[in-house]
Amino acid sequence: MVRPHPLPVDPLAEAKRQWLAHGWTHAADGMSVVTSVMRAQQLLLARVDAALRPFALSFARYEVLRLLAFSRTGTLPLSSVVARLQVHATSVSSTADRLVRDGLIARHRDPHDGRAALLELTETGRALVESATDALNDEVFTDPGIDSSDAADLVAIVARMRKAAGDFADPRPQPDPL
Image (cartoon, rainbow, N blue to C red; front, side):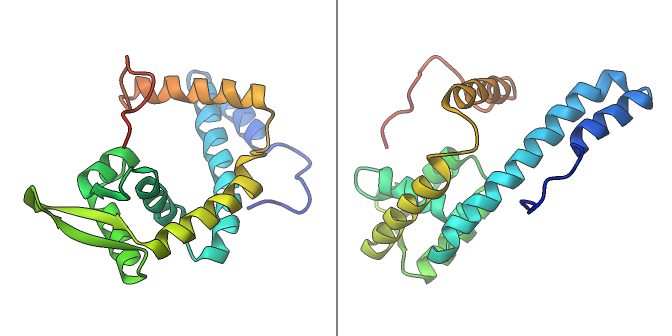
């Protein structure tokens, strides 16, 4: 939620002050990190949701469509979508079901593995994801709310946090092409 009028005091700074006042000094910095990142995520998600609303897309649905559009053939195994989006298979399967229902993707059996599913972007899905990407680029990604130097620093800091959590491993600096 973006407020029409900013609060007179940063509530997250006040929360840290309270943590320190209650003697939780060992956890105050970590609490500040977690709550700050979570609040930033809320603010960004609100902007993303507003940009995608005219396309009747959630960010999860958009991500599946965009990933398929990035692939060379517009088709990927469901397991590859799960791995690249780093979400549970049930979530991707549910999202795919809604995209199939709306005619934005098709689901097929993998000819090489009859137990596996392939997701394929339809022409309607391709047109929609391109329009939605234009909107996201114009309304969110071009100006995420911080300058490019801070953005690069923030991405690097969060990448170190993600790597430490086991989110990805080096040494390859670029992912394999889809």
